[in-house]
Image 1 (cartoon, rainbow, N blue to C red):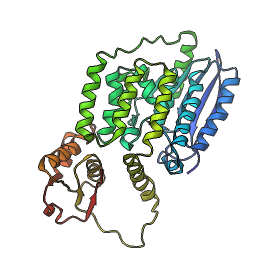
Image 2: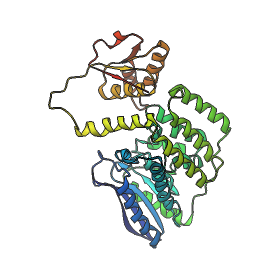
Image 3: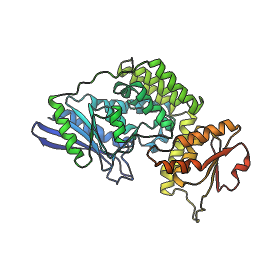
Length: 395
């Protein structure tokens, strides 16, 4: 896949030149923009232009249907030490922070999928517009056993109430990586304007020019009873992972830190935490699963020269967090019966309910009921009778 580039274009306006920066890897929408080493190098070059030009404003947007999907996870296996992981987090924070420090209005025009680091770079801008066509926006890192490492845990609570930031960073990812659409993101306050897709970039440029003479005045979000919010969130995390995964607990601590600490102190804490989490067993297993499902399977790496067997029933040994994630994946992709097996019926029932609860909200009610009826479980091994594929979840 081509490396993602930050392309700076000059747009002449009645107020002066505006920088229109497009994030683009030259591929179609099936290969989203991601931020690897080459992309960050391109951003560095773009920042030199943005910091030294005569710009009156900047608009940052993506290629058709995609804003940015975050860090290039295929580069994670190259990280060999905690120090490298911390340095990678700090590098991204510092580069994105230079966008935040630009002396003119900056607007992230979120035209398509905006996930992980893609949302983080948008949060570093002064303001955000979002298209009504956007269907996928969120911070997915906790789903992968890590945390946002480029400012997400510190910037979200400075923009929206803590309860909503918790939903964005922690609880939605634990619900099989539930994402927001453009309308919901606007309702939560993650975007300042909800725009139609037809003239989205032009309308975003017009909004940026409005900010030249009338900057946004933001008041600090009302976090309410912080302790109560955190207790409720911890209870939800306990129900989801039972203490087995450190990332969501760590993310909650960092979100709470953002409500009372200076930004730079919070960013340092975020980078240190990111460095610790990258090497946990849960993160390594999740990143490996991502590599297998999202990259290697699509490319056919290691696929034998044989006719594939039809999968009509899938079994999963276990009913915990990873087991329910695997079950949901097979249920949504294959739409075949999926069975879970664990030591107690209570654990099995929790896993089955977790899978049903993780089905996307935008599914028709009839489709949700149908898919929910396909998942079941038991404590006996006979539940796997007739399965064409059985996997064991180790977390």
